[in-house]
Image (tube, rainbow, N blue to C red; front, side, top):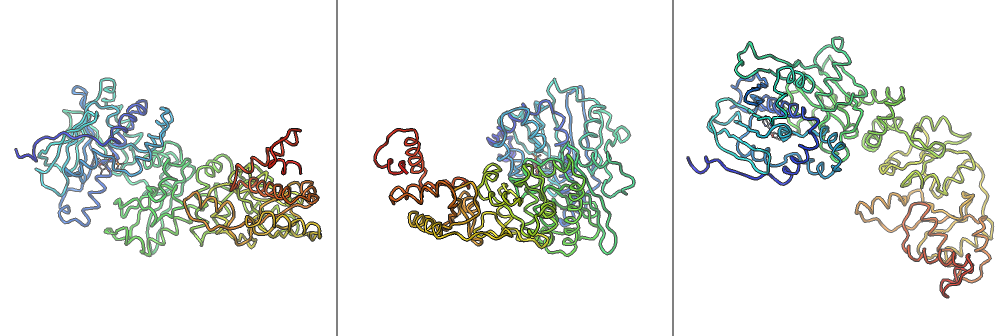
Length: 632
Ligand code: ADP
């Protein structure tokens, strides 16, 4: 035996080790999913064989009558899952079964809370893959041969799941992979015909290859029974399918045990033929927001052959929560991702996917109720990306968005409802962006609108700043920020008098370069001052977001609007000591920034000024410097 042929012991990556430990504990009560995972891997491997055989000459002659065999031996305490799929060579085994291949897994592990129950639900949803075998097995052996490599290049991988695994070369005639689990005593009850049948039907009924179940020693054709319904469900006539069929298929496709909110199934005929089955899930997969670019949502088949997780070519990013299958009869089988990109047939399919998905969401919105709520909570933010990314559908998508408003705490106000409730003569859709609903509700900017009974949409989602940067108009109405410098609220606003203008001038002089303009305005009723922005300038909110994202934001000076009728401003007007006046002007400005959720350049200075005022108000004394501000 050459050195390369000797058995070899290797250590798992630390992440594998971590995952194994977590999983075995967290999924103990959900142990049956291991079979779903192994069968799903076998099915993927069979898909890959079919797909590679389209272009790889050395695979063309192979038997492509693919099936997945599950065998059990109650006496020996073993369970095997075999496929005749693509298999793995030595390097692939090391890469796939010794490390964690999937890029999101690390993030996923980091996101676990340590609360076993919550984590179990997450892990179950995540799809834990091959390593889940160790939930029930004390020993796992994998024998595999890559279908396009010779019989003596096969490999055996074995492990007890405790930090290391062994690898040795073997001979194997059959292409594909056989996985043998030796079950721990407490899991041997799984080794019964009725149990395995039940589990396979529950989790893997719609796997597109026959799954055959047999007991050891009775593997003759006659004793091997196909237990799943492997006929492609999406290819069947709608009239043959019940709601339960669609729901089961959804679960086997996604692993999500929650029922989908709704679905759409179409067979498109004509110059281009394809079948489309789309689902609207009721909950977001945990990684939807993290992995914006890595989606497994909609699977692309060509004449029943699985081609790829179709990602962006077929489903735009803002619909990445959609699940389902597209099966085209007309696309060339040897299509690549790059070709997909600019294939006219694919563009047509994509347009249909968008249309049908929005139809589904619109129907849900019309029906309202719990399902619509669930949808909004889970996917409302993602859908907003559509307003930014999909110019053609902008208005249609915008009509599906819901916001809180100055008249409603719940996020239930759509743009159409807003327009229906507009005041006489109002032709602008007013909004205010803020960090939180609380900040928005108490913003001084709303005062002018409250006084006139005009509703303002309160936008508090992180993405909302981008949203309004792209949505300038809806059904002929302009969208405008309630914080913009010039408010045209449809009524005459009094010109500031001479004394108000003088006061504004003094404040500007005191604040110097910190502010752009100081304006004596009429928008405020209760507050002494507020920050307003030039219509073209970046809002404070946007500046803050960009800074948090590590971007350089050009220093821009906000304007300050003052309410000359406010008692504080009245007192300031009477203040003759310019030093004290300056302290008060600074307080006024800092407070306006704070009310906006903004950040102060000198927070300690602010606290000192307020304290000085407090000490004075409470009848104490303070040092000379503070005294100046306090005596105003
Ligand atoms: P996932 O399937 O989510 O990628 P797994 O841990 O289940 O994660 O599997 C890791 C990798 O191991 C798979 O991506 C695949 O490349 C390989 N693999 C697992 N099972 C098989 C199999 N039966 N045949 C061929 N390759 C397999």
